[in-house]
Every structure is written in structure tokens, then in C-alpha cells.
Image 1 (cartoon, one colour):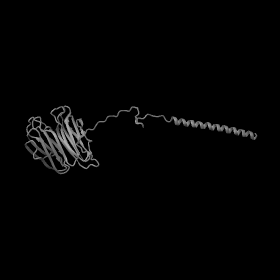
Image 2 (tube, helix red, strand yellow):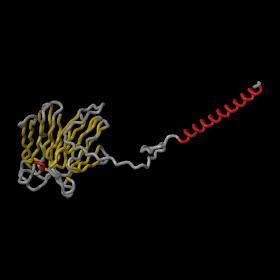
Image 3 (cartoon, helix red, strand yellow):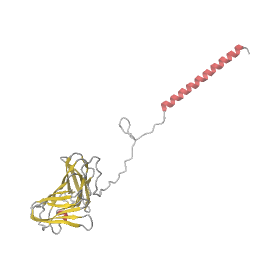
Length: 302
């Protein structure tokens, strides 16, 4: 062949190659565009989207869990900057009036916190089948209330230099249980004022829960336990007993009688030691007259 023929063949092959390369490039571009547009298949989720609305995909309801029952008394964990130490007192065997008793009263306990820190306000024991309404408030705020066999406020928290706390107890409905009340709070001066307890005297069918009170405490330091008390309506013979309950059997550490009285005079006081557990009892030793004296007392301990 002459040179013109080879030149024509070369030109033709070049044109064919160019066409093939162009077609292949176009196919690649189309293929890439197809992947970008379609993307992977979307799957539904159950999380909130950016607009704040939630997916309409239904979700299963959470399985309910049992609420643990507080069996205290127990001391809460101190707050990091808590300055005042915890004080704890348990009022044992308090007989409550039923809410539907028109002559009934609220058993009331008032005390002061010093500085910040948690509180534990709990009914720790109750008579069989008893239901209690327990309410608590701080300073002038409204009462918060709980109802149950062992109601409690284990997440209460003091956040001021000094606050006054009030706790009330009452049977719920026609229930009139006998309960133990445990109070733990941060304070430099452990003082509790008690109001509207029964002081009915000694007689058949009169339980100790309707005749004064028993308070169990452990001093944080050696010092003096003190008790002021007065009652309405009647003159009675009263008796204050201090028991060292550190070991078994318990030991009577002190006992004093107040004859024909409407209040304790002089105020009761006795020395107590740190690291020991004490019970202080106040009882009306006179026969029950059918009256229902209203007892007010102020208990203090180191």
C-alpha cells in the first residue's frame, strides 16, 4: 500500500478510538450520578429529629420497676460543702389519729437545719395494715404529702443558712396506725418541738403510743439531753425515764417523777455520752380519766 492508504486507515482508527473513549466516559458519569442521587436505602429511627419532633414509629412502653422500700433509719451522704453534722432521732410507737376522726390531731414535729445538706424524713415501722399520711414543708412553703405504709422524704435538701422544717403525721382515711418516725437533718443544735401527742394515762386499752412518747437518739458528743413538756386539760403524775439502750439488756440510767403537774418543773436534763444509744420516755402514770390531754414537748440532745 502507498502512504496515503496507511494515513487514511490511521485517521479512521483514531476516530473510532475517540468515539469509544467518549461513550465510556459518558457511561461512567451517568453511573456516578445514579449512585449520588439514590444513595443507600433509608431506615426508620426512633430518635428525635433536628426539628424536635419525634419519629412516629411506635415504641414499646418501659417495663415498670418496683420502688424500693426504705427500712432505715439511715444517715444520708453529706453534701460536699456541708458544715453542720447530722442529727438523728427516732420517735418509737407513735399512735396516730385517723383522718376521719373529727377530734383527731396531727402529730407535728418542728426542727431547724443549719447550712446545706440532705435530710431523711421517714416512717420506718408501722403496725400491720396501717396507712399513714406524712407531710413535710420548709419555712413558709406549702406542704408536700405522701401516703403509704412507710411514706418518706429521703431526698429533702436544705440549701439556706437556717431553715425551719415541719413534719406532720396522720392516719389515712379510717386507718389509725402505730408508727416509728425517723428524722435525720444537718444541725449544730439538735432540737425537736413536738405537738399534739396524746397523754392519756395508764389504763386498760391505753397503749403507750397514746400516752406520751419514746425518743431514741445517739449523741454526737458528750453533753446534756433536755426535755421541756406541758399538757392541756388535766393535772397528772408524769414520769421521765432515760434508758441506756447501747447493749442488751438495756439499763435504766435515770428516772424522775413529777407529781400533780400540768408541765415539767423543773425542766428535765441528764448527762449522756457520745457513742451510746439512749431512749428518753415521757409517760402519764395517772389513771386514765377519759380525757385526751394534748401534749407539747421540746427535746434537745448533743
